[in-house]
Image (cartoon, rainbow, N blue to C red; front, side, top):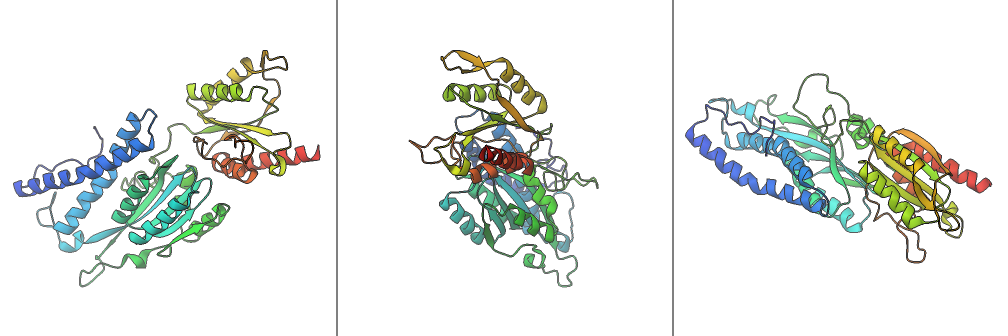
Length: 397
């Protein structure tokens, strides 16, 4: 695995004793690297995952390995660059804050595990359940990483660290050289608090009040560009090169489809067309007042780079995607683009999105409140307004 990080560089001035310690440390860290790669491979089981696993390995080398080196220097006084460093300069801890984004957090077992692991690792923060799921943790750097490794091992539809930041807590201002308590520098209470599905705005207010608005904004892939040239927090809340940001901005479109005579074939065509163009998509049916006896309202969402999304829309206009009343293939003439523009997230696979109980429960049927959450996380409030306006217009008719 190649990396541009300097974290693996072994200084030429290292003594033979320190070199042996360095090798021992690297071999001891190898199981953690393998565990991180294995967890990512499991998460993407059934998909093409070579690049994703290599990216996870690169991420581990840039972050966890560098932190292991730093921690070892502090704990064991192994000098890699300076033969006689001052002890007070090496005594330090890192207080970290990380924002974890998930497609959803619903399962009671996962919600309980998040709280239990936070207590075990002495972490504070918040877990917003529903669609999307947002976890913000705060605590000692190593404990945060251990927490993330633990929850990565669970089965998730989509889970990624979107933002992080850290600050060094040392003894530079202490006469006796003792470390200051991490608790004195925490911005969140030292406990994990669960927030309801509709409390995303409340979480935003909490972060804004304690000066962590930039960290919260990473949940929507909005990153503040670093302006001081400091690369220490690359991939964090203030970085212009976050872990999961694409080179091109995400573009999304929300389309209202009047009807689907051949629902299975039509839906399959949409998914296939989007996949071949590198886009993610959503096909969902909802009902006024969640009443399945009424005519369904069909929404199709597509997210990718703008060129690819428009390519799918063009194919849609010129392809025979449905059948007419006689069963003959026909073009789509009654769809309408309701919203388009910047998107804040991809659509993930929607297999586990709750369905309305209706003859076998179809996974393309969704409660209105759940559809609101999905649209809010992907397209923002403007997409939610489109949904509400469409429901109101159908009701008035």
